[in-house]
Amino acid sequence: MTTTTAGLAITSFVNYERRLQRLALILLRNSADAEDVFQNCAIKMLKVGLIGFENDRLESAFFSMVVRNECLSLIRKRRRSKEVLEAEFDSDHRLEDAIPRTDPAEPDLEDFLSWLLSQVRKEDKELLQARFTDGATYRQLAEMLGVSKRQAISRVHRLLERLRAIADVA
Image (cartoon, rainbow, N blue to C red; front, side, top):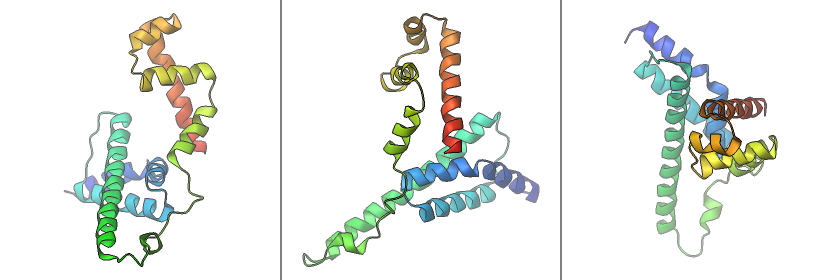
């Protein structure tokens, strides 16, 4: 791998820094851990030197998946070490005192999503629920809205873009 390839990979990864750090923060509920995960992922990107995504969405999705997997790996690792600690502690000790707690001021994923959804109209919430919770197809959404399939796709896309913009500001 050349220095140029590595530089492009890390530059591309860092372009999504704010979004990726927020994702790690939501999953881990700890800003120090979120920063560590982001840095570990940046180092991995530097080593691998991935470039050549067809578009920004694929690149963003890939980087989000890498950060998500790194967070889940850290959570699993902690869960395993917690189980080991539980086995080693006697009944006189409290495990909760031995494991550092996350900051209660850190945002919770459910709270953040609730707040985010409170920023859109009731009709938009219903549209999102039908699409992503109930699994409605775009054709079903189009019938529900009384519009064409293309218009339903555009409406969902615009709504998601609006939510992303609100989340980026938050």
